[in-house]
Amino acid sequence: MTSLIENLRLAWEGVAANKMRALLTMLGIIIGIASVIGILTVGEGMSGSVTQNLGSLGANNINLYLQIKETPDGQLPLRMVYEPEDYITDPMLDALSQRYPGAILGISAMNYMFDGEGRRDGSTANVSVQGVNEGFFAVEGLKLAAGRTLNQRDMDRFREVAVVSDRLVANLFGGDVQAALGQNLRVYQGTESSPGSQVLNLTIVGVYQFQVTSASNTAESKIPTTLYIPLTTAKRMNGEPDGYTSLTIATAPDVDSTAFAQTAASFLNRYYERNESFQVSSFSMQSVVESMNAIMGSISLALSVIAGISLLVGGIGVMNIMLVSVTERTREIGTRKALGATNAQIRTQFVVESMIICFIGGILGLALGTAVGYVGSKLIAKVGYLPSTTSILISVGFSLAIGLFFGYYPANKAAKMDPIEALRYE
Image (tube, rainbow, N blue to C red; front, side, top):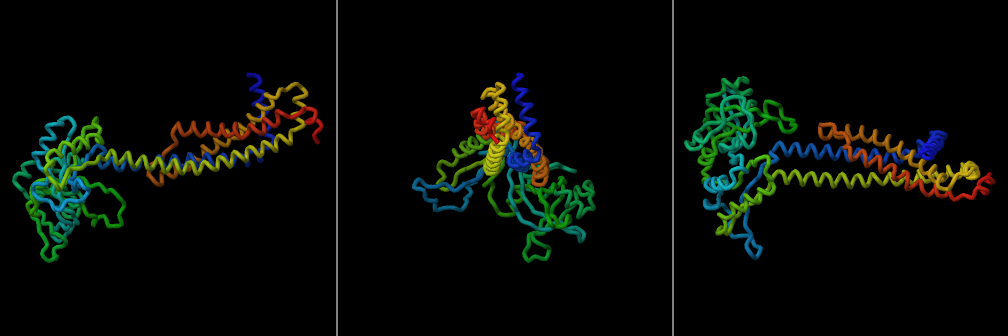
């Protein structure tokens, strides 16, 4: 222990004796560590942002959809247009729910109608009209500001009722969500003056809270919002048959949605064994999140490896300056050896000195990389991230390893010096 402390003291005195040279030597280590830490932190921030954005769409959601079935010889079927017997039906979904009651929280289906305008007393609001089923609101997590959502009775009776956004209420009803309930609303396909445009006469039964999902240059009063009507009503107006070509299933939190996506598709495909044209396919949002995180991790790793090249350059700089230091201190080495210092003690002194230079450079690089990563993730992901404990430990350990690796050759050269020749060195 005493020998180690003495070596640390001698190594520190060697570094302190040439502060500017030591600092310049550290620059390669500082830049390398800062680059790696900054890239990993920004990458973590981007992954977190992607996960959060996709998670807001429903991390446990599964999308089921009809897909064209390939023939055994790899060719596409002759019929590629949906017929009534091709659609996923409510009895199929009921059988799926009964088979896996604990796995399914809700099933959401929707049918796009048109983009248009809601009009009242000369005021307008841009809308996108969609037909949805009863389970849509629970699966999508829409929050009501007033009234109710659409129910099964609305579906069974083909009612012309609507759930609208609070943004539409602000444009047409002065923002009073309670006053909007029960009011009639005329919705025009395109604009009122569009020739042959479809017109809907709807009664407002609910108002939901609209959430802006992305930045837009459109004026706030002109931002289009979705207007929801019963799915059965939308299908009848569009002349479409019952059934679904795509839908979303919300699974329970403890269910592996990626695995259940395959299970659900396999279950429904039993109804399509004799269908030569279509089959049910699926994917989960969780698998999308995992794929995106894997891609972001690979990109961050690749960039970190590239940035790590500067650590190699920094290590070579450390070796170079230690060789210079050994040459300058030849007489000191000879004196120590004459006084009884062993080769191991001389070697340890210079290795420790090299590791101290790299350790201090690693700490400074870590501080710089943390600041760069925090600011970068704040700008990109809107949330400031700090490096993980693992990244900190690896960066500090790697900087010490560089000091050991690149400092060993100069230290070994010093240890092998002949004391007589060293004392005679001018």
